[in-house]
Length: 288
Length: 311
Image (cartoon, rainbow over all chains, first blue to last red; front, side, top):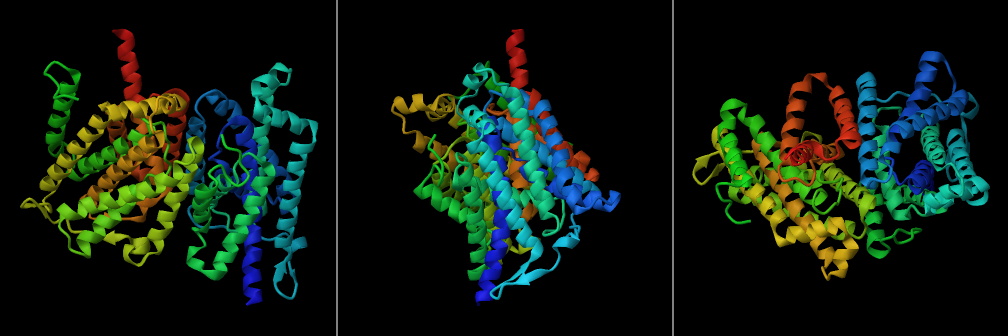
């Protein structure tokens, strides 16, 4: 009984770590650029796929992938911002959503064409195989690593945004980008870098996810729906809110899987409906 | 909208629509023509929301799909006649619209899009799991039945039935757009605070538009189920919600005929490219990107702008 529930909660915590990483990136991008990055899920999928391809074709291992893939995807993000998103500035944010939706279809369609529907297994790195028995639950070493690292990355992002000069510029840009530009800050460059960073974060999550979930072309699209709901529940106003909501939703899903498994896939949307009833602006959001 | 006099473009527009509609099944496959009509109705209903209220719903497949399943189940398992099964589907979709609309309209803009997407996922999961929907297989072999003594298993009879319903629904959409109600919707789209300050109960107008759009999308889904004689999971996926956005964007959002033109284009494209498999998705995505970057007014919108400039 205890083992079953803690097992599900642990799984929930792992999923929640990914929700947190992805909603964090989404919130950072939206905060500054006013773009809801629909392609976030596809970029996460690309991260996982690039890691898998690196191992399959080039023999690049997990640790290098963890470093190289986000860097490469960051460059892809920079290109997307320069080529496409820049042209939509000042328009209704809906166009950004539609554009990134189109990119999602292109990316997923291309990967689907090349690799089909089936998942590809990615081995857990050797240093992180095995696990510990905590008495009430068996904790695989790799999963502990995921929780730890995503916690660290979330904390580091929060720290940079809330406690450093660079973060202050970012927050100022979120409030009023024209004023920030008037102070002599290169705002267009900040846009580009921020989008690149958000994409790199999604790709980083993808590499982390590769050994846990099967690497498949559609792994991102089911995830992005949940992450969107997380963002609605948390409200995109606060970085900490995005992280906490992500973890909380993961745990809620785990608990539902234990209590009533068929509802596990919809519980996040039910919570979203309840939050809309009680606090339409989101748990951590400001009304606007 | 009074009955248009002989000299107006509207009169000639409807004349052309009737002529093309009557001739269509003899020129192209009747099933393809019916598909175009149902998707044109779906896109027109969707456009009522996106084009005239400025609300982007990312979950309209929920209404199309649930109505398709309800109509399919009603005529296959319950043996209800068409005249009841089709309205039943549309009514369920409208009720869903009322439920989703009430919740989703508490937020606006991109949040509204994300919320509708989430709710549509709930419908998807329900359809997958519920016992009467046939899971992965969907409902198959839905009987077309008879309407007003007409045997709909004949493809031409079925076509003209679908066409008649489409024409009525299209008129309803057009009438709604031109009505004072439609004017208020446009006012909300252009400047919501102003509409509020003028004393309009904006939330009610939006909800009413949402329910109407959902109900008409459901009507399209019901007709689709009868046309193809099956209801599948494909009709409740987010890809389907994306497709109707593409049709509307391609044809021209906020124009009366744009969505129908878009539906015709998208279905023709899919028809010709069907052999390419996954590349269709890639091409669809590319069309999205190009439309958003360069032709935000859509085909009909661009043509209209061109005409305006040259006269």
